[in-house]
Amino acid sequence: MTELRARSLDGIPEVRPGDDLAAIIARSAGPGAFAADEVVAVAHTIVSKAEGAVIRLADVVPGDRALDLASKQGKDPRLVQVVLDESAELLRAERGILISRTRHGLVCANAGVDISNAGTPDTAVLLPRDPDASARALRAGLRELGAGGPAVLITDTFGRAWRLGQSDVAVGVAGLAALDDWRGRGDAEGNELHATVIAVADAAAAAADLARSKDSREPVVAISGLGRFVSEEDGPGARALIRPLDEDLFR
Amino acid sequence: MTELRARSLDGIPEVRPGDDLAAIIARSAGPGAFAADEVVAVAHTIVSKAEGAVIRLADVVPGDRALDLASKQGKDPRLVQVVLDESAELLRAERGILISRTRHGLVCANAGVDISNAGTPDTAVLLPRDPDASARALRAGLRELGAGGPAVLITDTFGRAWRLGQSDVAVGVAGLAALDDWRGRGDAEGNELHATVIAVADAAAAAADLARSKDSREPVVAISGLGRFVSEEDGPGARALIRPLDEDLFR
Image (cartoon, rainbow over the protein chains, first blue to last red):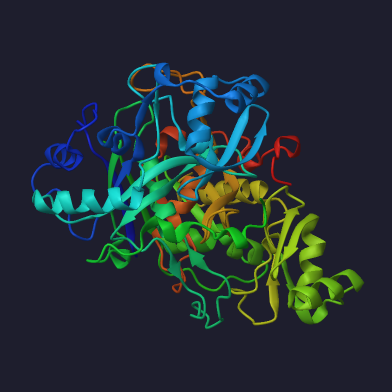
């Protein structure tokens, strides 16, 4: 028997630009709270806020394209401008939904721009500029503060093309194998597994989201039982989860 | 603090057509092994095998379309015929990959047909005919056998359009809310959450997959900590997770 456990942390306060997020998490968790083979999943919103990746909508002047899209899709033109600024490519604009490929290569609604948990009603929270770098910095910070050197996941909530509902995925990773590649290895019966690459970091993000209630301020979840995927090195990060453009069958 | 726990079950033997899967799971788990507010996630392969949803490739005669597709995509024409038989619509056939909408409405590679864990090398394992009905029957069976009346998930491993790696999702559900709909409810700061519907059953399936190692025979995982989503009634099942065709932006 193996066991996975995910527990949400209490007492994370509202995070503001410039805050030391590692110190906030370490303080909430208590000394030595994380084992080195644990994974700490952190909702990107608090990472983005600490890094100042927030924009006051009152400061945004929408351009012609944003005004046009906003009118057709029934959205706030200032939000649409922010979404366009965060997008490398707009893939769909239909039914009031904007699906983009972000500058990180992530395909998601609104280019990952979030207004629901922003603290003040007219603030847009962006994705971190470089979520893998954010994860590495947070891991290093936790280690320095004596809170253990757990792997770090930075998570966001994505929709899915053919399934209703949203699921958390990993947009930044440090110290966890984002993918577990079984291709060429055998299964329990010795058959070759042809195409099994498990998206470990995304599954861990989804598991973390089940350990909290969305209406409580629990953006940090500690996961144990994934030690086989945790490494001392930070590794390639969540970038490894992005399907290359030339393998995209659904552009 | 809330906590999610997922533990894999030891000792599930090879399952054969006609086997009583509820009895097999109850025997492996021991008496009263599951609490009524737990969720038992079961890999669809053993459900399909117990139900006889398996096909010997040696018995399959591929038709012209299967022969043509198999030749172009470098696949076994008998497998392609089975995939076509299971598909309502073939969405993509590129790069050796077949993406279908199954007769259940699921969009996935190979219409969910699996050859890797079939027990014998030339057997194809299909998805159950009606995975929600399978989940309900398994739940009722476990309850009758005194193993508790846990919610039941039947899982499969799906790829994702824009992300590498695969993740387990729920194809059958009984007694668990597949979706947790926060639209119109407020978040911790009182802001309205505009589009947050959490795909609880898929996240639970992903979490369950992390509690086992793919090369060990652990197709059954018990999850605790989701009692708030478990109900006495079986509910609408995993069907609720399928995005209606007219809302599909990526056909």
